[in-house]
Length: 133
Image 1 (cartoon, rainbow, N blue to C red):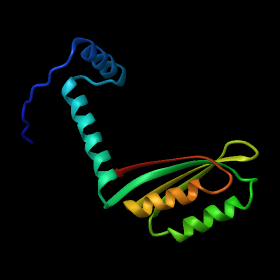
Image 2: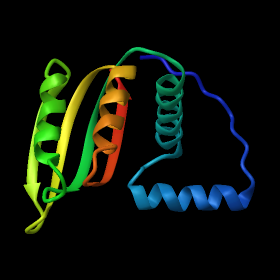
Image 3: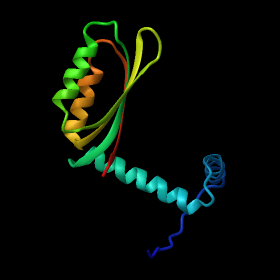
Image 4: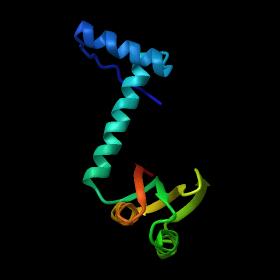
């Protein structure tokens, strides 16, 4: 793989903060850190601006005692069985559950599934993390 060299100018204070961040995250050089930042921005831009296939995780925390949430979650997951790759369920305490759903599909469908789940009564928190394939 060939690479092209480019120059980047930083104010000393910004460069110092960047170097501290790199050290904290375990980077051995600035180039790889800058490449990672650029890759992240490109992926996030594509996810915002384009339709296409994505893969991601939906992590939710919910109270299984509220309403009929367990059945509603199962119903939505079965409705999207073609997109769901994996699920896991953890009991946090007597009432609280954590569920992780790995989902793959068209961006609009993945987002819609996530929003439908997060909107259920009893879901305390939901977070979708997606990336392009």
